[in-house]
Structures are given as structure tokens and as C-alpha cells.
Image 1 (cartoon, rainbow, N blue to C red):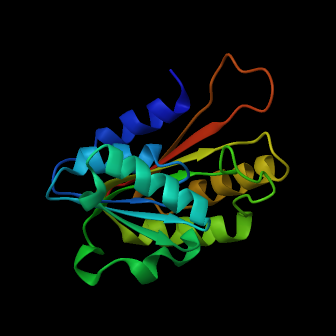
Image 2 (cartoon, rainbow, N blue to C red):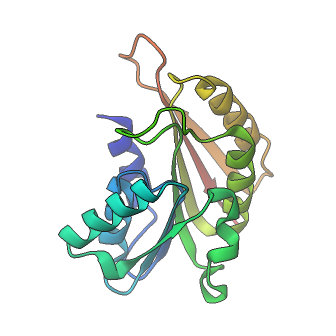
Length: 187
């Protein structure tokens, strides 16, 4: 099973109808659509990306799937996500997804950066409700990708005791395998 599907299945274990979720890197909208389907008509997904192309692609996918009213798309760096989360939602975030790297089909020079990713992850941990989960799919094959992955894993492993961390890597990948870093908030 591809790690994208593994990440989604891990998020589906804690996310349901009426919940609030964040897609910290909307990309082409696959995770945003998954989250929007999962939270249902009473829930909401906040989707962030720095590229207009990503926001447009995600918006088009949501419209095609009839999910547009379940998501709020914001062209902003994920490090600034906390500024855009409505006050009444800040204690209700059940799931946050990150896909690190670059937007498939776009300029591969535009990538997530370790500094802003670590800030975003720190803010995500603070926004996450008890019982919530963060899934970080980190790609290592592009310049800076392995370093970013290593820093994210180290940051996750340094979280307080009320967080648990698991890391999954595909066993059948020979070169530059992605990693799925899952962070659960216990209390």
C-alpha cells in the first residue's frame, strides 16, 4: 500500500463527521478531498499552500467531487496556519496532514523548507486536540528532502510525553524512500 493511503487510513482512525481538520500542504488536493469526505457536511477542512496553482487545483478537485463547501483554502505558508484557524475551531482540530517536498507537476525548485516546516509542526502540535493525530509524509528524494525529514523526525521524537510518534517506511523501495511520521496527542 502506498504511504499516501497509509497516511489517510491512519487519519481515518481518529477523524469523523463534524470534525475539524487541516491539510497543511494542499498540493493537488488529494488529501484535502479525503479530509473533506471524512469530516462530512458538518465538518471543515482548512487547506494551506503557498502556490496559487495548488490552491486552484485543490479547489477544482473539491468542486468536481461536490466537496467545495467543506473546505476553506488559504494561500499561505503552513508556518502561519494558526493565524487563520477560527477561534472556535482551535480546540477541535482532530487531524492535520502534511506532504513535504514539491508539488507534482509544478516547479520542483519550490519545495517545503525545514525552517517553516518545523514551525508549522510545532504550531500543529499545539492546535491538535487530545486524541488527535498528525500525519507527515516526508519525501527524501529531492535536494534538502532527507535533511528536512531527519529534522522533522527529530523534532517529533523530542515532543513531551503526552505525544507518541511512529515512523513507517516502505520496505520495497531501494532509493530515497519516503517516510510517514505519525504523531498522536494523548492528552
